[in-house]
Image 1 (cartoon, rainbow, N blue to C red):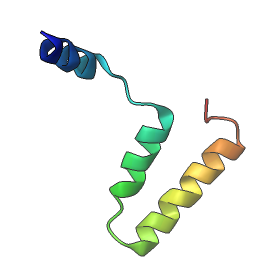
Image 2: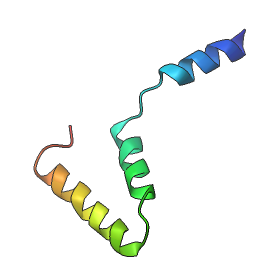
Image 3: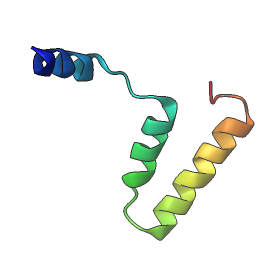
Image 4: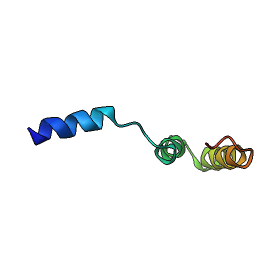
Length: 51
């Protein structure tokens, strides 16, 4: 019964902003792409869109 509840809870889990950002960074293909993605995230949070 608890396994069913655990599966249901995982299915309803919405990723946090940090989890979404980490997934975005993990998709980088090389070092230059990673640096560009980091700059993109830094610029977004500096402008106030990181709610």
